[in-house]
Picture 1 (cartoon, rainbow, N blue to C red):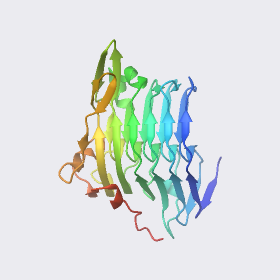
Picture 2: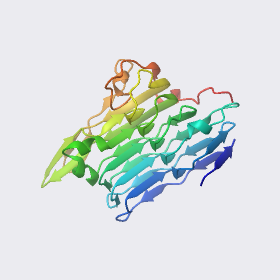
Picture 3: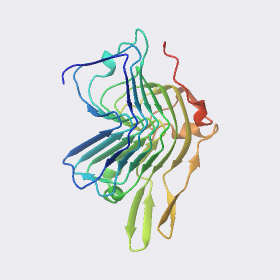
Picture 4: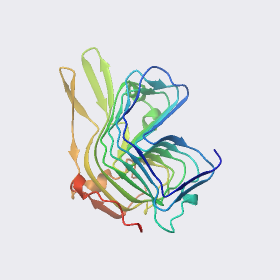
Length: 276
């Protein structure tokens, strides 16, 4: 579509979505509300809301030949979304409360985000909230266990891979499991190759003001122990003393974050005050 306009509407999904089967071609985009939005023109007016409450699951048998992007709300937000958001009344909201499970396979790129899998442009004018837990492991990880491909597995509590120069008005309180799992005989190997951040797994822009007016909390596990084929995550709990280290998966060149606060529990998550 070349034009999409959503004026003050609330789009809500409460149903569970499960992707099973075998191969889904080169690219697979999965979202609780939209798989992908690639219009050349968007306008979100008067506090439009996109809400997903359903569980998203990609089973172990499902795979894509090249790319998989999964978001609690939108799998892939491709074009100039922020350029056409009308904030004269209020921002647009994207909210996910549903759990995300991934156990499938991708050959090149895997992006799993609590709200958006990947965004192609800035979305500073969109307030994003995620309280849905993310569990990302499966046979895909065996294909990323060595070499440069490790950086193509990205998991974010809000966005997995972002082309934003800055992200504002985001809140995330969830548990994220993301690690490679390779089994040989009775032995398991775990590595921490996925880029995992409570807000963003991998931002493509490195800026000192990358994240503003944000709040995070919860737990992250990038390793685990195995006993009798039962996988037990090795959790790191975010606290007021360490949450800074888990904002994004890559921190090169970033020296400070403005207004990133700690969320002690899920009840502390509230909609930002943006004029409603």
